[in-house]
Amino acid sequence: MAIKATMQGLLIYAAMAAYLLAFLACAVRWRRPGLALYALGFLAAAAAVAYRWQHVGHVPLQNLFEVMCFLGMLMPLVSLLCRRFLGVGGEAADMLIAAAVLFPAGFVFKADPQMLPPALQSRLFVPHVASYMAAYAILAKATVQAAALLLKGDRPGRGGLVGREQAAYRMICLGFPLLTLGLVLGAWWGKLAWGDYWNWDPKELWSLASWLAYAAYFHHRAVSAGGRPRLSAAFAVAGAAGILITLLWVNLSRLFAGLHAYAT
Amino acid sequence: MTCNFPARRAPGMMRARMATARRMLLWSALTGMLLVTALSIAGAFTGSRLAGLLFNSPPLAVVWTALILLLIAALLEVPALVRRGGLLAMHAGVLFVIAGAMWGSHAGHRLQAALLGIDKVADGQMFLWAGRMDDEILVDSPYSDLGWVQRLPFAVKLERVTLEHYPRDGSPGAGATLRACKSAVVILKDGREQARKVIQVNDPLHWGGYHFHQIGHDEVGQSFAILRVKSDSGLYAVYIGFVLVCAGAVWQFWLRPVLSRVRKGAGGRA
Image (cartoon, rainbow over all chains, first blue to last red; front, side, top):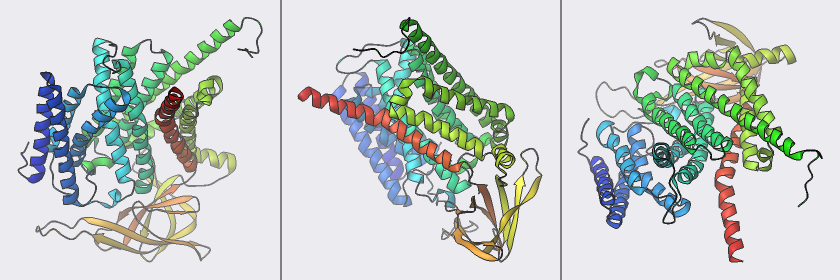
């Protein structure tokens, strides 16, 4: 745990503070000021990513610090997209998620710029990681709906928004192709960089397990014809747990050192 | 509405039987997915070497074959999987990936040798000294630290290895970070040059049914390089599968709903 007393750190803390205040404002039903603070937080997070990009001279998606900053910037965009096109609300939870993903960037991970080793010098680098990050941000929001569905059951939509089951389904439909793209682009890159598209690396296996959990979600939803929404939701939550492990555990734990170990 | 159902007697019963068959297929698919998920998680705990052994073991070959048969049965039995292009592409894509991966595995290479007489090395490493040529591939035994040597039907010559480093940041004692390692290699057959390329990480050479990947180098003297030699058997089936799965997912989950919404919108206004 260390505080980053740099321009980079200050931008991250500003974004975190804005996201948390936005959440508090929404919690006491000050919706408009809350959304304004959320937008302010987005600007600060975007500035943090832009600053980092300029500082390191490559797209900042190389290590967990950079990835977490990027996720923190992505969350408000996902909220906007989901409300505008999918009829999904629940921004208050997104504000908390955005603040939570920025926390490790602000306090845990080191921000030392790293030079790209040969394996990371590839045109597939940005598409692979960016697809995954976009998928993670969307599926994180979907998990909130799926978890609420799992714990409290479905709720009919109101105010032009859809119910929990539909909300989770629509967001998983949005995120799943990105998860697929991330996996396939990673496999293609693995072929070029390491010699094989599949190396049985722990991170690969966890990412396959997460992908399969979402595939199982779709199949269970089809077989039960929407009859057991809570069990379908359990598959979605399991997929999200797999993603969390893929993203953090494999990178952090020395037990699972593998080919992706440079991304710590 | 006309019904062109072939069975005249009790079409309802036939339909019910088909619905049951589809449900059974879906449940089997779900079971297969959960099994592979559980094995993946187990494999993640054991590390890549044991996981590779597990997934290439004879019992898993049975599982993969069962999954292929299941996918074929689903494509034959469930009309929606064929009618909807996105679902067809995704399922056919997974079929291609599993089949291609099996064909390209060590066991797949043994099968190729037995059935078609194709004698290829599935996967191995070449240790090449600068200025010398070699045709020996070291194949690691998956079961021990030992390995064996196999020969390629052509020779690979390493002309030179060059290392490039990032400029040092000035801190004393810090080694310069490697930026690139380039191996200039030439393929020779019967003494005649066939191909030539400067290979590096992310930029392999493809020749004679093999990919040659830069995977290791001499830290000090720039005198040798380690190449991974990987057979391309089954690779293009896997790549076709990748394209199908991605295109299918994008079509099914993004373009199809957007297009239907646009059509509905146009219909509503008209």
